[in-house]
Image (cartoon, rainbow, N blue to C red; front, side, top):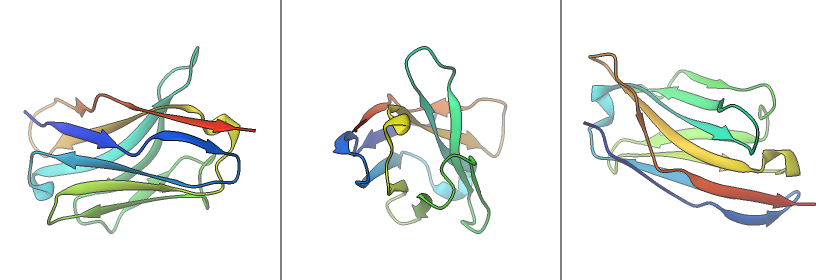
Length: 118
C-alpha cells in the first residue's frame, strides 16, 4: 500500500502561482515514478507531469511545459508541482499518483481543487 496526501490547492487569479505537495508513506526509491494528473468537470483525467525516483527524468504535458515544474524531496518524502502563469483552463482537481517498482498497482491521492479565475 502507498498512501498519498496532497495539499496546496486553492483559488488564484490568472497569471498567479500555486505549489501542490504530495507526501507519500513510502521511500521514494521504492517507487518507479510519481506524478500529477488533473480532471476538469466533464473531462477525462489527464497527465500533467511525471518524475522518476532518480529525479533526473521528467515528463510534462504540452499544455503545461514552461509553466509547471515537478520536483521531489527524498527526505520528506514529497513530490511538488510548482505552477506558474496559471490559466483558467488549468482549473481542475489535481491528483497525485505513484507507481511502485514492483506489482501492477498504481495509487492515487484524494485530489486537491485548483481554481483559476479570469
